[in-house]
Length: 113
Ligand SMILES: [Zn+2]
Image 1 (cartoon, helix red, strand yellow):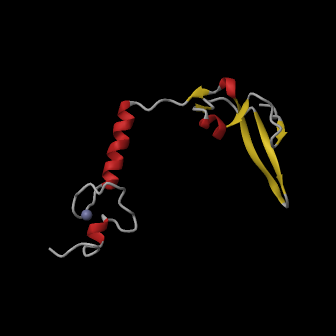
Image 2: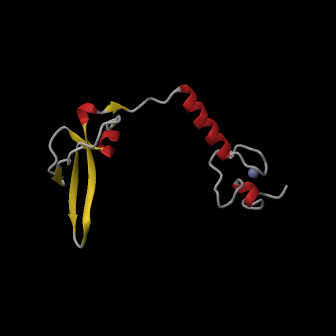
Image 3: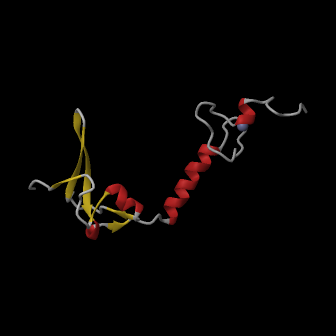
């Protein structure tokens, strides 16, 4: 592999985009090699570097399959389920609490039954 071209920040030629820019357009590099790199000089530090990919060689972001969505939903449901009362809290259980807020703060805002 030869050296890749280096452009100054904001002076990249058309047809090239960073991974983030591709992602914003629903694209991904798709296995292509880095086509060029951008360098933004910084004072007293090494330049900030961004890699550029060819837009024409980019591929659409692989769509989520039904199985992937189901797995994601299961993972989210597990993270919402309170290990103390077993209920779906409706939000992801905070790691700092480890249980849903009614379990963590039984008297909080509740009229005694
Ligand atoms: Zn609970």
